[in-house]
Image (cartoon, rainbow, N blue to C red; front, side, top):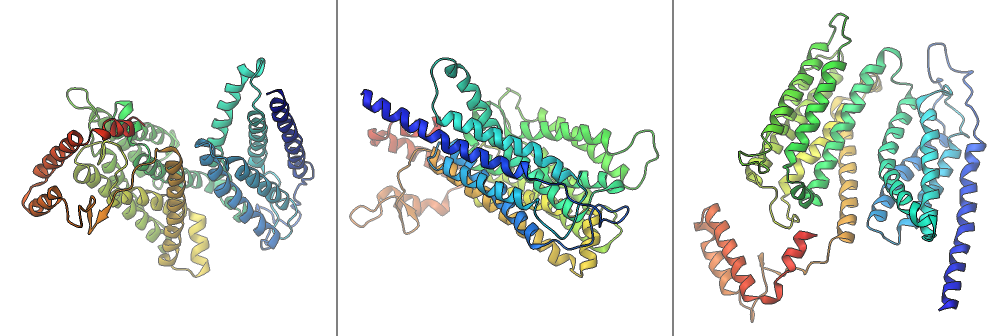
Length: 485
């Protein structure tokens, strides 16, 4: 026993120097960083006229891969306590260090040293450094003495920072694109903020709907509230902010101030109505279509937004139509697919293909809105690209993010949910054959399938499930275990 303990202690101690060496290497790019020269930047501009060189392109792609793919993957692996969590995060950190160094070694285009991308690089790098330190501490399993008291706080901080990094990474990537193109300066700043914040919010809403659809249905039920309560609360809060920030009060009403402000008003008015309707007269959770209607009316308003450039008008119009479609499909999902129920099954694992539509359309709406700023529209118009090609590119980006979110959720689900027995499908019918024949119950349901209404069909299914549970004592407790999980 003593020898085994010594061996374990030595293994832990040998693990520490490797990570200390890795941490010292991580600080090298910070110490060797240099300020970019701005001697070739013309007066009144934020970037020089030189093109982006190969080194900077490599920096961009490495950082996008490390911060946008590797770290979120490592985060999910950490949540499910996979043994691959540490290797993936170490690989991501190594890539981030290389990318950080390349960002200070490039030639070609020059930028002002105080740009938002370089300013935000320091805090996000420090957070990554702190995350590595907390990870090493937790990996050493120091649990005696004072370590036993502070370990849970370190674990909590490690989890919070790990889940915040994907959001901060997204912000930094947006800052990088803005800086590289010299956008969002002076009079364009307010419009840029509106497009990028609101566009990111639509994408975040789509991601949350995807999470709740695939792995969050049971959590919603445990809260004792309907999903529309949370949706409507956020809508009301967001509308309140927009009501008082879209117009500079005390100045003249200009351009689209009226539309932006009234849009905020309808958001908080509708949000309050959605909160009220989220419970029935007995105080039980109740579904409603208010959030879907808010998306629809917002899309209609944005589709009629006046624009100066034709390509901008077409892009805004497509954004409006996409958001309207998201709202309509969301209302159809709640009213007709789910029929006002929390989900399609008690265990929260059954989904309909239709339920993916409103979620994806929110991703697409977000990318369309983020890609419709005045400066971006002017750049696309000068490039010779028409609005159709540009919109298809934005939809392609939406599909990639939608795919990646589903992949991460699949990894989480497969590693956190209990293994369920595979269902045998024979000729499109669930259930095994008995001596090569379809069981009598299946045959009877097949014959009556076209003669029953939906309500009668649900009744037969419930009776069938009850009969099955009585005839098969070995299954008692398994379904409840799945629901409890």
